Image 1: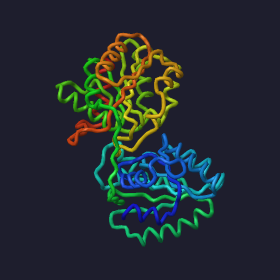
Image 2 (image 1 turned 45 degrees about the vertical axis):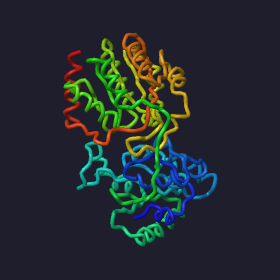
Image 3 (image 1 turned 90 degrees about the vertical axis):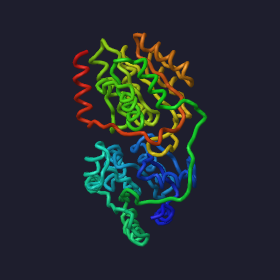
Image 4 (image 1 turned 180 degrees about the vertical axis):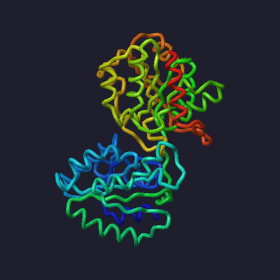
Length: 373
């Protein structure tokens, strides 16, 4: 169905969420209609964040908000749904719109398979009534579902539209860009050149895909890299766990701005433990590029100041390859926790592939390699 029709049927005035490629039509429509407007549309750091934000909107206005997300975000909403929104607690009504990645019977990446299997079950377990929108779902069917949903919302219950692949369409075009000039793939190529045979933990999305293809092009083994294909926002914590237990070897984390924002508390934990062998590289294009390019708030905050406040001994921001190479070499030679923010453009190769090894093969190869260090 056309996404504009869905929005008209829902009839909400405020939307908040975390962008998803399955909901690209919705995200682009909201960006075209509202942009980032605190009164109508906010892209949040993570799904729990937007759920609480929606609760605040309801408390202030008495109106029903909409929260959108990929189904992987269901894990992040369990606590606020169960202990804040639930009708046995504060009875705060919210309409969730959830992109269904990994739907059973539909090919998807390994990190989505189990989440796809339990998507609807998790909603059932949380007491959230759901309706599935597919390519053939009619406006009339959605309107009938919304009529039933309105009865539940009036009782302080929550409801969800679960969107199958291709379930929503939008004919409008939205262009996402920034003023930066450095391409992420080239940035990662420079990191690989300096890190040598040091282990790398890379974040969710295109960064890990590009790292994999760079190793392929270089004829290098993939044993050096742990590709965090799911679990967005947790790469720095994984890298911390590795760095603490492999203290005599430099460990690198290739992170993204959206991932850092999603669980920014991890930076405080990294800084408090201050492993001298960890280099945390945050490639910042101020965008959720892997799912479409929608903006993050990382273009409006000072990551270097945040890192220093969290206890990182060294933190710098670079916007040229000359400055990047200097910062990478300095971090490699130093014996202190380091952060390098790299200002990055939005964009990737159209023919960018995906890892050809399985997640388990990646884990085993990485573990076998670091066991030798």
